[in-house]
Length: 422
Image 1 (tube, rainbow, N blue to C red):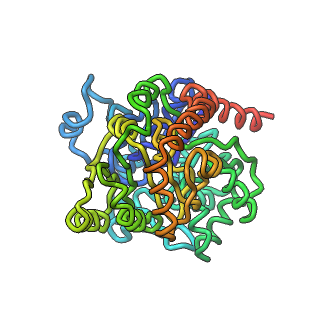
Image 2: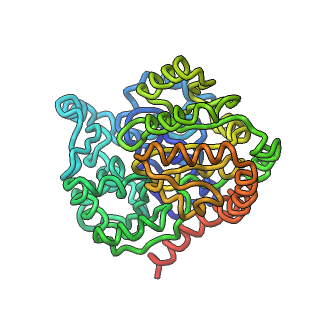
Image 3: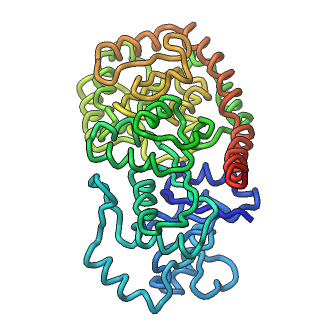
């Protein structure tokens, strides 16, 4: 039985969606998490490894996580998944002292840090004990860097390594000298590389990667097209009166630029509702200003599950996402699938999915007037948004069908194991 060790963000829906695609293939799946938080409930078919799981009171663990027979010694249940402790009881005390004295450890040239208990020394111990046939890191700055340092600690006999590039992992971080050196060293050490943008394959090669490149595909899996079709068919996009805006304002997100463009389109937006999702603190304050000063019908969406988001997109005429770095925005793909007209920055690889002016608009991240012009056109041109929805649905059927991508994900690993066996 093939054994795969994922080093991944256990609390991320992206991680769950990827692993769930291969959960029923009979492989022995394991996960080394990035912190103490519980795994996302949607994830299945994988064993979670925690450094000192036994520190949690047994009764509390049973009441919170376990709903079946009493668990075996040193193994509990987290979000319905088996959880194992990496260190046995006699070795806990020195590890706790080390974790207390050095709460975070750096993983290389950059300032990227990880909690000691979830760092490379603990990971290296797990790798030596578990002996996986493949290590798959999902994301670079937290997970890939961790594996790179663990590889240095393990030395000879380190398992084959597949590194998957998420979002801004190399497109954004390559501009910083310390990260660029660490990314280049990581790329020279991997055996297999995967990402969701053809753009990033070229960047990885520029940075020194000569590993085998896996087929480019979305990191979050596909969509249930039958379910999506019922959402998208409720109304033509031209009849909808909702605008969805991504609310991130952080190292990459530029929601404030998006809201400046919204302000310039206030006349065209009369009669529309605007929903800002994934909003940062700065974004919330700006929304309050627009609501008071421009009398816009604009709301902040609290946390919403995937079904709720799809339903909102299914009621939306336009989706607007502004950032200085991204891969293929999952929000943009969901907008395409549900018929919302996508307006996305050229700092993503949206141009690999849509043709500017036909299936959506490709915009710069820092030109408010340009963004406002494209938003106004999308609000006023009924024929444009309706035709884009039809064209985008064809793309979604060809490239985002969950059944198709699940088979591709399985073939992904079959190809790797065939190469390793050959």
